[in-house]
Amino acid sequence: MSTVLIIGAGGVGSVTAHKCAMNADVFTKIHLASRTIGKPNTIKADIKRRWGVDITTHAVDADKAKEVAALIRKTKPAVVINVALPYQDLAIMDACLETGVHYIDTANYEPKDEAHFEYSWQWAYQSRFKKRGIMAVLGAGFDPGVTNAYCAYILKKYFDKVRFVDILDANAGSHDKGFATNFNPEINIREVTQEVKHFNKGKWVKTPAVMNEGSVHFSFNYPVAGPRESYLLFHEEMESLAKNLPGLERLRFWMTFGQNYLTHLRVMESIGISRIDPIDFKGQKIIPMEFLKALLPDPASLATKYTGKTVIGCIVTGVKDGKESTKYIYNVCDHAKCFKEVGSQAISYTAGVPPVIAAMMVLKGIWKGAGVFNVEQLDPEPFLNTLAKNGLPFKVVNYKPLPAKIGK
Ligand code: NDP
Image (cartoon, rainbow, N blue to C red; front, top):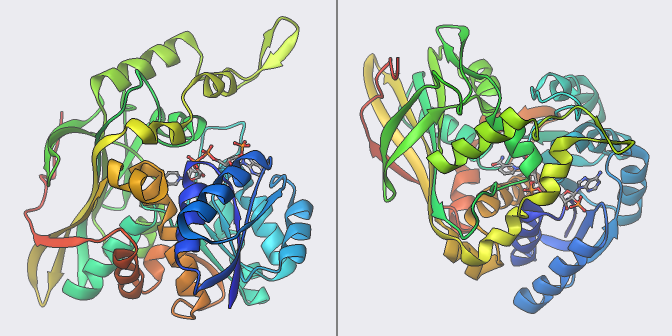
């Protein structure tokens, strides 16, 4: 008998709410809250229609810890799943601390006025969560999240130590829009336009952003999706994996981008429409990026016409009893199938299901402890096996390591 409070009712929050409803034996009472009540109410009606489950909806300003704490006191959840925006992470963590409730999210904190994310702000909560006897599970989406669990799983099952990891994320799907992001446009554009870093022999090596001259890329032959140009990108799970995988020598993250997408990013940057500092417009202060977000398609709206698949996984080279080998662990997810099941596209689906399974692990006491955890610090096996039964199976194959040097 467990009550869950989900905060955020966008593309990802919708999938999270549906999956909780599909596991009504675990989540006996479901509360869904967002900035305004409209989106939660639309999801509520769809959940009732598809699964016959009644959920309760609320409006909350999750930038305000006191408001979130009041909602927690009213709804009495055993766990809060934060699938709002990274800007709200600290306020929601503060509310969980105040009320003594477990916390799960899918994206690490970033300040609104600086396009920069890192775990330091959330890792700073370690002693307070420990003292309160509650768990915070950080970055429990797909990447970060499942990719962290994939690394931990390969280490647990096959190796004594891991030497090299390449995380590869392909969206081989297509929709009917000229340009659209697959999750919140503001967060997505901030992430993919930043300077790139990868980890090599204990150091972070910087390279140009994906759309700029000198960016590092190569064609990788993905299972099911085939060859796709994949670009070196800095992604948030790299920070915790570099810390938590002992002996790790090299860690890279690759994401596929089409030329059309990169051209749009270049134009946005050169005309300044992706700026995050306020500008004067007819006597009013506006932030160009917020204006751009209002113009771009809502990622959830892509679902109706999305076809094709996502392929996300990790190539891990490690050593067992002195012998080196390489495994490739990955998931394939189909946009149209996700739409049929829960009315969403595969990016929202792959991000929205894992925090539900993480919440199950915490509620059932399979993941336990007090403090702040990244996913690779928790047992990957029950998590990945339960995830597989809930729509996101994985496959492990023998593979060959990617070359140490890729690009110029
Ligand atoms: P959306 O923009 O579609 O949804 C965000 C939701 O949060 C909306 O319902 C929004 O309400 C709500 N919200 C925004 N501000 C507040 C606030 N102050 N108080 C309460 N609610 C608020 O984003 P997505 O669903 O695409 O993404 C959600 C999260 O998932 C993001 O943090 C994203 O980074 C993360 N993500 C993680 C992935 C992973 O694999 N780890 C992959 C993809 C996304 P409104 O629309 O009314 O403003």
